[in-house]
Length: 181
Image (cartoon, helix red, strand yellow):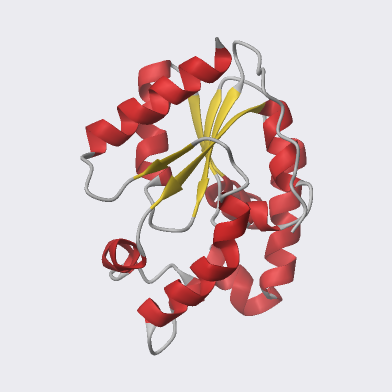
């Protein structure tokens, strides 16, 4: 895999991007960070759903994954360049150039969790099209093995396993402030 260059000195109002696998806490952590920083919260999946007028699940069913990944590319190109905390869909950074594009607009932080934690957090959510299979935990392990190398390209990361919500929020906030300093 080719390493993508991520700019190291973002501007003061730079966006904060949370990347990682589904169920790692990107949306919940992102909402709290946006509130505490006085930023706007964006969720790439919600942005796509609003534009398409249908859910991610419906998009996958009708158009397939590649169509959805192209809508993610639209998001990367078109969303605001500053003043946002952005929860990125789990597969957004798995396409060439996307991680670097996010890094040009702000600070990118990867959130991590074990497959077991992810399974526990996602088991009641029926809006996870990639987990609508007989053995979701096995699928999580498979997808995580595919995607983990992309998440590891991000030099800044936080494990959410065994940490309180507040601890994760504070860890990400410290990383973001330090990266902008």
